[in-house]
Length: 244
Ligand code: SAH
Image: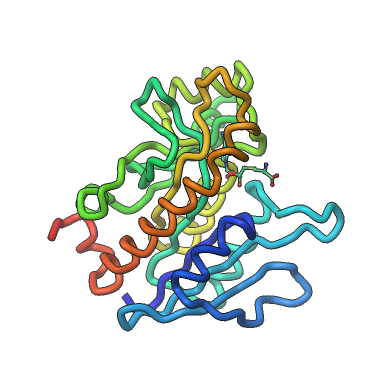
């Protein structure tokens, strides 16, 4: 691969990644407040595209819409061979998840908060966007694999829970399916690398877990992301599923 793009939502998530890769800021797309950084690793050109700060609310632009827009600009202007959606995520103890676990995507990316009970629209709402085959990669970097499910909210409502049970998802975030949708539209293979900051089925509030575990989970995320890039860079996308 010649070019790999990594799309991330929060500045605090991206900071250790940028440090580990020695990435330097480059111009993004004015006037949009996305933050792009470039690095080189193993002969591969890397672009770390951070969704950046929301100018109105002065917080990070988490959620599906900024992720889709930033991803579109990255893929359209920079044409990577692979796009990686990376960051924090919720997991489930009942699915074997633990704080600090790193998950790669299973075959598909789904949404859990787009319920459209019209003929034909149920699956459209869920999405089912394909991801790259991560079996060999997960074994190589010591990561778990799971269906990643995305929604616009941090919490989980009973309706979300029913959707998540139906798709068998075990990794919950607010960006991945949006990245995967754009990736499918533009024909770029997509991979998720997600570190678990909180367990959705814990009795401790998600926000409390997120704050307590973020630093530890990010440490695991950075190590995994570097290992993933090192594994992917010398291979083609078709070779990713093929083992060592
Ligand atoms: N408390 C933080 C906000 C975290 S939002 C702050 O003050 O800024 C959570 C971010 O991590 C989102 O980008 C989302 O993709 C991911 N995330 C972590 N745990 C999640 C969960 N349980 N559900 C959905 N997204 C989660």
